Length: 82
Image 1 (cartoon, rainbow, N blue to C red):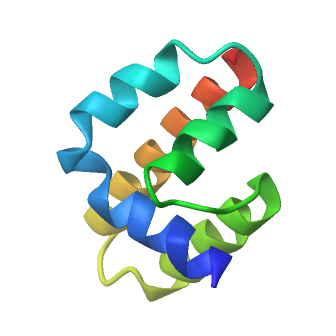
Image 2 (cartoon, one colour):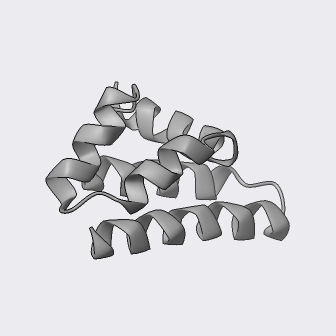
């Protein structure tokens, strides 16, 4: 399920330094989402936003919510600059 892939991506993001570096180098959103799919994270931008909403509601503290939103905003920035 693609939303689950986006959730796993957000949860795994801290341990994915090589993938993060690769995403910075992508030219265009299509290339970015292909790199994610190749790494096992198959989701669309809309599914990513659904995953963020799902995880945000489940946050237990404001610190957890801040961490999640920082990750989400990082990915949005990478997408915008791809």
